[in-house]
Length: 333
Image 1 (tube, rainbow, N blue to C red):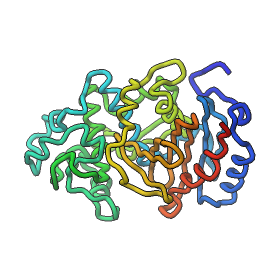
Image 2 (image 1 turned 90 degrees about the vertical axis):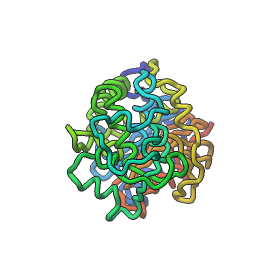
Image 3 (image 1 turned 60 degrees about the vertical axis):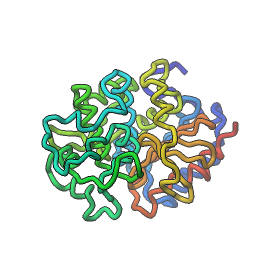
């Protein structure tokens, strides 16, 4: 099929996928076995072969991506780095001269780098679980300058020494990308990423200052466009015949930096540059968001799977279960 700005299509049989397994999956989703799943899409060998929507959702509706947003910010950081606008070794505070004096100053805060934000090793005294009363809830509810909120937060230890899930880090990274490129994060995303892959209708939850996009979890995206982001990972930064992101950034950002940082549905996950990584079932690069938002990339199967949902915490990892029970086993070669 001739490539277009949107997905080239194919069939399950043509891409050697077992239609009976995927049909069984759709049946189970419709009867509620996995909670409220809203979409499942599977691409193989660069072609979209399975696209189903459930519980009232449709193809053109942008869906909350929650913390999948963080992995998108990683891609945007790579694009800015590829343009020479920033380096992973840059100190964070150098991008915010207008915020001086920054509260709780010390040498550790001055030493924090872009790489520390990408790898969740910020050194900030920040704990998100449980959410009620956490710094993240306070940020989300404050109606204040999110960049100031994170920059002023107190330090706990030297950056780069310990992994801690800090959603404030990607929000700050979004501000850095904006300062480095001269374009607000969402505008840069549209110009440098979403435009080249033909993504449409994307929008972000915004705060202060000046409509700052929530880089920790505020992106809304069509699931078929989320699958294109997975295809970029699979193809080392290429979408169809265009090199969108430098392949060296894709390799660097999906290398394991921290091991064994989380376990979901019995599967252990490591961490790269705002991407999750598991070796179960072959190396799988993963973006994960609350309530069941997922991008899975399996290079060994030449396969991308996206699933979105409206689940609570007890069912948030449901898609991980059917990735291993139905989707990967459906790949015949």
